[in-house]
Amino acid sequence: MTLILASQSISRRAMLDSAGVDYLALPAHVDEESTKAALQAAGRPPRDIADALAELKAVKIAQANPGAFVLGSDSIMVLTDGTILDKPIDRAQAAHHLHAMAGGTHKLISAAVIAEHGRPVWRSVDTARLTVRPLSSGFIDGYLDQEWPAIAGCVGCFRIEGIGVQLFDRIEGNHFTILGMPLVAVLGYLRLRGLMTS
Image 1 (cartoon, helix red, strand yellow):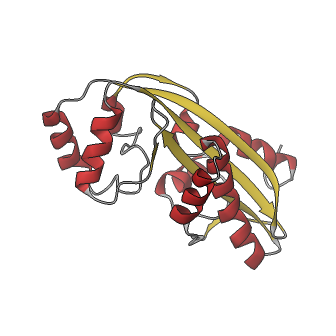
Image 2: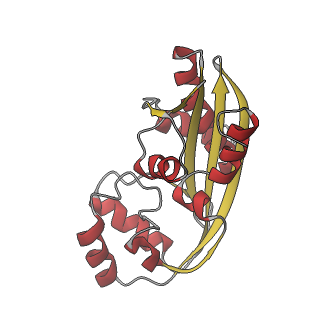
């Protein structure tokens, strides 16, 4: 049985690579923004939105690959006031996001869904709490000089495995959840289904 990661995310691929997982990576090409907007308009909580987006990706690829297990994943950053941050579209928006995050404690929600034969068969959602220290405009400018555009695809505008760790005063939660996927839970299911040695 083949495992397909429904993503080209560098961080999610790096997690699976480091864990010794054999997989193929295929981008799902789903309309995340309109789906997210519809779910928000319907009053769905952020946890459900992350879960639904992960499922959307997994199911789309699973429908085209009925003999495979397909892993979809999504992460959402929720500010203290409930605002959901999207991936920044440009450097100016990234700076705006960083200013909005500065000095607050926010939630990062990461979801993973595995689909088989075009339907979801397993899911896991985990939440981390991230306290961002006060950030000066000078720090944000210097940070973006180093990190933009590499963080363009990162919700929250950071790579925790790099200098993005400098944004934080406190981090509560699983490291893999912060990287973008509840990896330990994923590995447990892959062992249960025989895709990895138990």
